Length: 88
Image 1 (cartoon, rainbow, N blue to C red):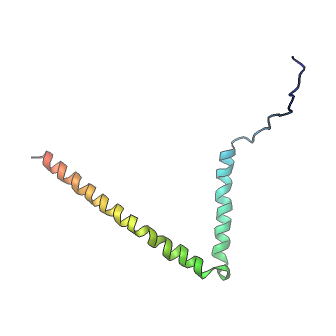
Image 2: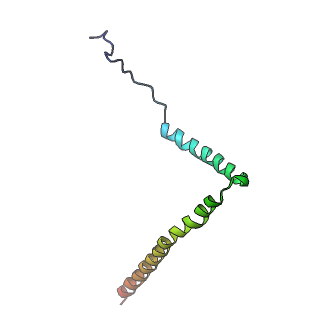
Image 3: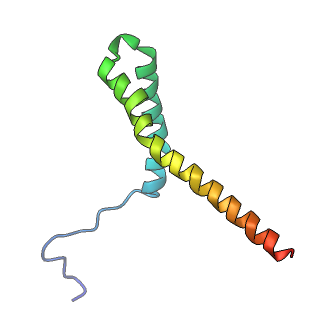
């Protein structure tokens, strides 16, 4: 028993220490260099990509932003009404 090796030869591979932390540290560096390259090379800009990311994407989020603002106003009004009723 003591001298037997693994029959299927499936040995544990050493995992790198803190793999998620290593990925979290390297991601901003990689993404930052990609963004810097895009910003510094305007000749590579695509008109359709600019329209998609600067016009269409924000316009798609506008209804949700308006709804959120209305819900915040209603919440503030209801809080104000309930606190004024407590003072009676």
